[in-house]
Image 1 (cartoon, helix red, strand yellow):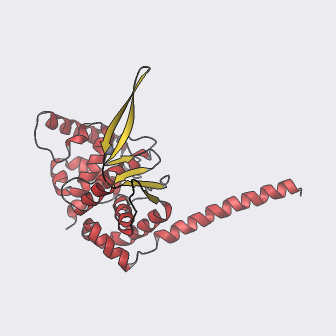
Image 2 (cartoon, rainbow, N blue to C red; image 1 turned 90 degrees about the horizontal axis):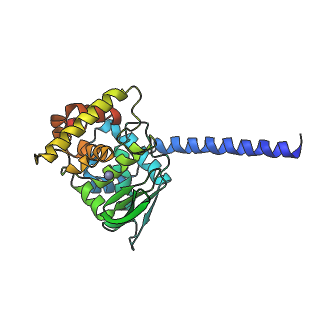
Length: 269
Ligand SMILES: [Zn+2]
């Protein structure tokens, strides 16, 4: 055997070994538990976990460990990232996927600002490009990263019933983006019917749009009328934060989200 083919063979063997080792590490993390200390911190900074049925505790903890192993959290504007920040953000992100096979495969970084931050967006009108600066509390980029205001992430986690949660919102965008682009049509659960999802989603979007335009009260935040991707993200926030109200107001939409995420938070006590 020539040296050339021997080197190729070694290269292929290393490639498959690394892939196997990565898979083994992932399986090991998914079946691991968090420490009692971490459980205490999470109980304090993400009180929603206290409502989660016990059957989901193990998968949630395994996913938190996988998330912490995969994702680096970086502080900006002088923010020092603490254990509490890491556990709070990881837990909230993993709530969305604790009972699905969906995962944030391409996410490696979460950028954290102390408070709301400025973000530049470019608007294209023919050959004219206008840059606009907006103040945001969170942002999700296709295939990562996620950018968060810690003040708003923490407040959103501590207040479990106000319908707002920026971490759930931005990670809902990450789930939506797994289909290639964020448009309110995420990769559905195996067996979930897309035509039903589409019909239910569009009807619920139109109803929210109609109520907002007529100045009527709504369970979902009016920001959901911005476009289909925001409707999905606001829907996921409301699904966790005001599940009983969402189920009452939009039973078919609640049912679709419940099937997608494999969860029924309206039944959590
Ligand atoms: Zn959004």
